[in-house]
Length: 303
Image (cartoon, helix red, strand yellow):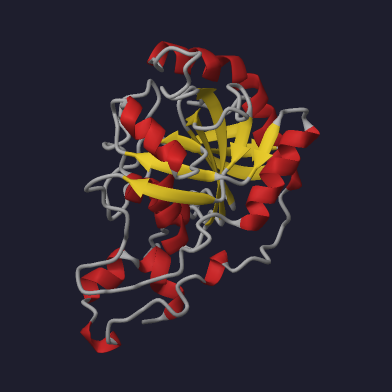
């Protein structure tokens, strides 16, 4: 009796999960990253919902990076509507260790001139009701945030600006307002009286979540206007902001490419262990569902 033969099917190769150690979040006017080679769109769903858009993973300046448009391509989300938790968590899922954020800001100081760049190292919160933590639902964690940006990454961004010939100011306080309307004159003068430097609507929320995700975070802030305090300038308008962002588009792309090339391979800062002493909840009381939801962030601590 002849034996039945079974045809052997070739083993199916599993699709390789894309990864990147560097993340770039583009703000107003930066909805893509020119020069990104072998680009691939990656659509991720996180425990916190969908990110603002598909992440684009590719090679820039010889390094694997992940790019995300903060407001979505076509600028579809208000600052208050951006799903910051999903955006940062998606970066974490891809293995991102450092995030370079790009944003448009108003100047609160005469010497911070439109079209110049600022690398802020402090934030002041004027938002209302935004969810700016991954924790809760049975797990309490309080981490350090006295220095809200990564000093090493901030220095790299400033060095990159100087390398490509862009005027840059190192350090400064970014006051994060809710929006979407711009400041009243009273608010703008008040912020100046507190010696704040620039004003925007997004970066603080990102910085808080990046710290909880143990991702280095620093921002390239493009000055587009003088808010509304300057007696020699009219009130800020979106047309003015977008026009100056477009004028600076090439410069910010040069800065990001230079920064990617300058970033060291290994981190020597403490951003990667910012949760080491943060957990307060008794381990046996943490719900299993919460552990699963935060696995990408807390998994290494085996709590």
